Length: 426
Image 1: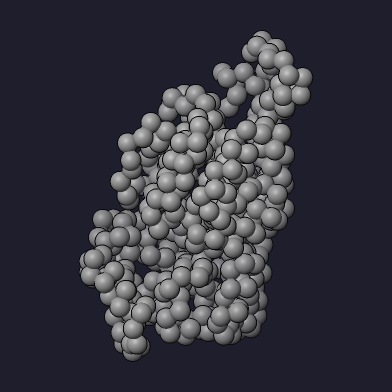
Image 2 (image 1 turned 120 degrees about the vertical axis):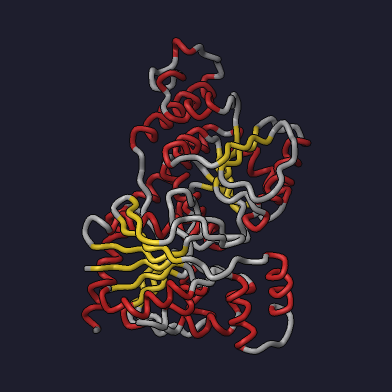
């Protein structure tokens, strides 16, 4: 089959969000199918400035066709327009103007899709929010699958999205929570609906090393006697303890730490995370807060904050394994690969309770705690940082949850079934 993915940005430098999710799926389908990605030349989602070269590229077995955006985004003007449109009576044309101002605005991509959609058996659109999806789904809805990556936010209640969710032949939800939200609020007319999500690898060697370290910690607590390195199992010893130790040494981390990964942005809950973590420190906590990803907000100069920057896939895995706990502070999630990747390496999470998706992950897996306010954050963090047995048990639960629900063979078989059924209907 020939499959086209349509997504607003694409590249190995773009980590997190629907773009990262799209890349993972495209790369996994490429060995079996002919896969194209239709995307813009933007790397930065704030401005949508054309930074990648226009034309065709080949990335990890996937053909990537990039089209130049016709305009960049004036973020201040867009924010003013958004405030008006979310609070005032307006027309459909006003909503389309809002979408143009939001960006990316890429008529060339849509023109290519209009001309060339016949050569593709399936069109897969990632994320509901942007113009390439809203306008692109209309080109050939009978062979279009929408991966909404949706959550309850002001934009989703605009009328243009009511039309969008009623258009494609297939919808691939990320979680049951996302599916409940969309089917409750919108008229879904898809002939194929499936809760799919994204696959996550369980790195067995790193996981076994973490088990050994946690088991050693449990023995320390159970007999009450301190032991030296010479008495610990070989898998505990720092020079053999795996990629987590490499990350700790590189970033000079010598004690417990909480890790966040992704866009470092107030919209992802990072401002609140830093405030809450500051309270934990003021109350006597001695852990560090490590932030990895692209920094889109200023960080306070505090001794407990470490900025690790944007990491490679391997370094990201090392960081997740090294972390004592991973914090997922975003109130808006449709899946959260950060949470699933943490589970996969056996690291428990502390998640924002305002996200129904994150709460569902925690309760179904028994691999994380969640907080609704500052006090709950501080107490839950203290509990996770201080209880080795709890972390070890949650780590085992998290890996089991990923193996059951997010193995790649499970995810890809769901996509294959959707492809077959859509072709059968046609």
